[in-house]
Every structure is written in structure tokens, then in C-alpha cells.
Length: 183
Image 1 (tube, rainbow, N blue to C red):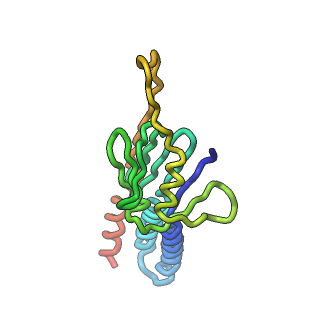
Image 2: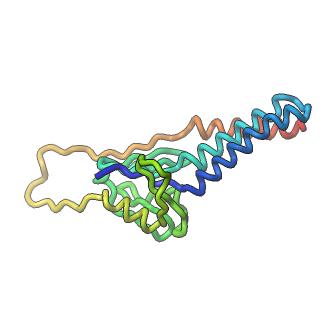
Image 3: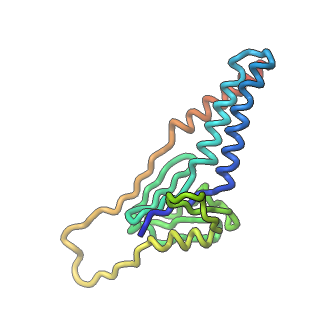
């Protein structure tokens, strides 16, 4: 089974537009004769928000694990810990920890796309098709007959907070507000 990466192409297009706006703001401010420090801070804020909120979120499905990259954190689940992928309110991953709602598909009508490293961009998917693609990785429940095994291999769930990007958005947002107040 090959790896699958599911993204939101519309959100990525918006990120590219916001990056273009952030780049265009710098020369416009320098030509306008204002303080040269007023524009780089808001431009950096716009670029960071575009990357963290619109470009980075994705689902990475490999034969070993499911990785959910959201705005605030990255969660990695071994497939044995995933019990169900639901689509009632967007894509929800049910694990032994409970239900994990995702930033990428918050509604059942979200437009997604699959990319697996081949040229040509993304293949359009709806939420149901993306969930079906993810379900192909979920293993069937194992029926245990007899005593439990002598050794147990852990099925890990890890969460890594994106503290630096959230802190950066807050700091740059405050600095951008202060710069805008000086206009």
C-alpha cells in the first residue's frame, strides 16, 4: 500500500493568494514613504497565518500510521488504535482516546484532494471519498482466541503541539496591531 496525503486545495490556493498579498505590501509601503518597519511585521503575520492555517493542515496515511496535521498540533496514530473514520460532521477519527475532529474537513461538503508525490497536482475528492481512502488503511479487528500473547507491541499515539507557530502568530499579530495603530 502506498502513502496517501489528503489536503484541501482551496485552502492552499488561498494561502498562495495571501502570500502574494504579503509580498506586494512591502514595496507599496516603502514607496508610500511611511516607516519601513510598519509593513514587514504585518506581512510576516499574513505569511505565517497563511502557512499555518491554510497550507500546513493535511492527513498523511502510511501503512504504519495516520498523521493528522492541524493548526495547533500534529497527532500520529498507529492504525491499530484507529477504530473508525466517520463523516457525519466532516472527517472524524475515532480512536481508543475518543473522537478527534479535524481542521481540514470540518463539514461534510468540504472539498479535498489527494496527492501522493506524483506530478500533476491533486486528485479532487469529497469527504466520503477521502474517508473511504483512509479506511483502506484501518486494519480489521483481530479476534483473540486463547490466552493473551506473551509480548505486546505498543500501538502509539503521539501529539506534538505547534507551540512555536501559535506563539509566532500571537506575537506577530500583536506587533502587527501595534504597527497598524501607528499609521
